[in-house]
Length: 171
Image (cartoon, rainbow, N blue to C red):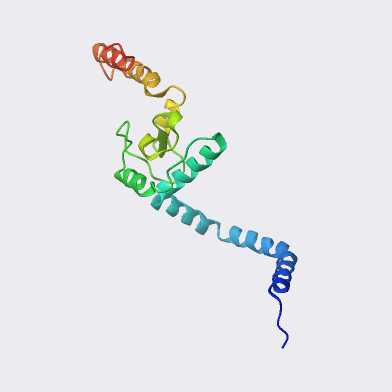
C-alpha cells in the first residue's frame, strides 16, 4: 500500500471540506431552525449559570474596541459570587436574572472609567443604574435621584438637601 504524504492528505481534506461547504451550511441552518427552542433554552441556561462569564465577554469586546485596559479573565468566580448574592452593589436592589436585558439585570460597572476593567475597579450593579451613571458618575446622578425622591415625597426636604450637599462636596 502506498503511504500518503501528510501534506497531500491535508490538501485532499481541505478540498473535500470546500466541496461540501454549501451542503453543510444548509444542513446546519435546517438543524438550527428545527431546534430553535432547544438552542434558546440552552443559551438562557448558560446565561443564568455563567452570567459572570457572559458579562466579562461583553466587557472584553468593549475594551478591545475602545482601547481600554482589561484584566478580568481570572475574575469570573468572584463576579459570579456577587451575582449569585442577588443584589446590586450600589443600590442594594435585587437582580432580575431572567433571560433578556432588564433594568435590574446585573451589569459590570467601572468605578473609575479611566482605570479600565480591572478587579479592583469593577462592581456589579443594575443595568439601568449603570446606564444612568454614564458620563457623570455617582456625583452627577445623586442630586437627580434625590430630586426625584423629593418630588415623589419619598424623603423630606431636609434629608434631600443634606444628601445633595454631601454628594456635591459641600459638607
